[in-house]
Image (tube, rainbow, N blue to C red):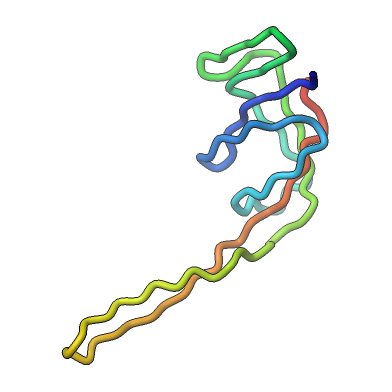
Length: 102
């Protein structure tokens, strides 16, 4: 069984393993990222951090930058009042690949 870890990226928590790709919120201009895991699972051995596991790092690289998500449309409508508003939003994401859990 491969090593797994729980990491926190921009307020969201993900269960990751090596060579896995994730779609996370836009991370900026950095190409290499490093995270301190909240939990590490290595076969039968589980390490829980308080709040992070010391001595363990999860390294990742940015594969793609500024990937746009599907459009979310918000509509406000009141019948018989001639009130209607429509607005849309496309969230930008980064795709990262976990390279090493060490």
